[in-house]
Length: 425
Image (cartoon, rainbow, N blue to C red; front, side, top):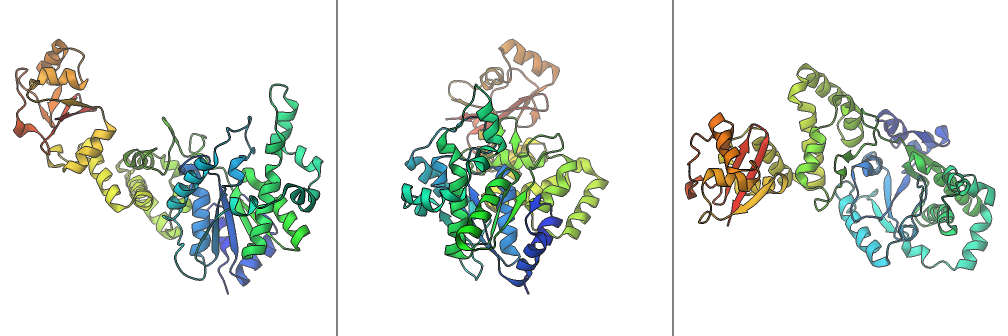
């Protein structure tokens, strides 16, 4: 007897729509189900918005079933037009291969590709799509798709009917390629389930139909809900744009802070979707959090858990310590060099030479904390300027080597929140 994964996925908020509900539940109970999700390699990193899909696969594996992740090296050369108002920029094959390799590394933080009966598989659909002969593809696959089915898609109609927009034959063919993937995975790996965002429902149904008509296979589909935050905005965005899993695109510190700043109203669904905690444990944590929400206990635990999973415990510890310094929970004088380096990448940081500039008024100007020496002297006189967390009492104070943190930094701030670092050569 296997786990009824559909029931658990529903309880945790993953399921927006599912096909053949009773049959799919029975399938989960009787068999080890192989299910797949495709990931678009249009960038060299996945982002927080992809986490519902990633965790959907991770939960499938955790419940004893087998996940397949498709890196769309073939379909990525065209781009999925679903939900798009204009044609995507086409990437070179080299760019796509690079992006696929980056995505593969990120998926390893969530899925076990190493061992076990239900070890995850990572496949690239370019491996089979590039072998297809165009005439054979039209004859063997295209014949199963009516033109009316294709043009009745909402994203197609909206672009066909708008005189300022258009849709290319290339984009129109995408749904055939994705359906071909499902049929290929059914025949090659016994894959009977495709999952994806709710904008993929028609594509999934097309794949199910193709597998049934072409291979006689009974296949199923699940779509995930569009995840919105408490403000009704698409989850995974920050003021600076999408929050990526790659530290080259979104720093580890900013990734951590993204979770720290989530709204209390979003906590329950985020814990259900993005952690493996039992529902009773989540309920108890949120009840404890509600007693003192200003302490942000639940956000802190979520931020720690997500940052450890995506970036590793060492990096998470570094940003946790940096955050504690920045918010006054830890004295900056106690911060090690790696924490100061993390801060230097996140708050305004200027370089200086102690042999040339060592007066605090000059350094306040150099750091950008004050716009002039006169303003710097005024702030010091008012008691609002700080060096390494201590109030500057004398505008004539000089910074010496013993003031340097980790041998090369000082922190300056005017007021409680305008933090600046100076890095000395």
